[in-house]
Amino acid sequence: MSHKSNSNDDDSKQVVVNVAEVMNGFEKGYVPEKILGATKDDNELLFLMQWKDKDKAQLVKSKEARKHCPQLVLDFYEKHLNWPAFDQSEVD
Image (cartoon, rainbow, N blue to C red; front, side, top):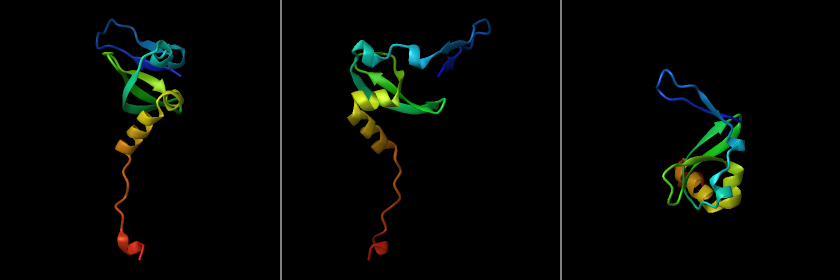
């Protein structure tokens, strides 16, 4: 799995970062603060994690987030789910 980034500078080279090979914040002992977003890379769900007292967010595998901070994962899903309006007439 790789994440590609490049700058606007024409002379810069494209950088490919293998997310699986980069030490994530959990491994460094960082404290997760909030999930800012989600994306898929090679059919694997990744969360953009904001760490407490850190300036940069980081993509982490969803399975790692579920293991280390399940409540943040639930909070993220609850905030981003769109439920259809409940129609009481269908129950009666």
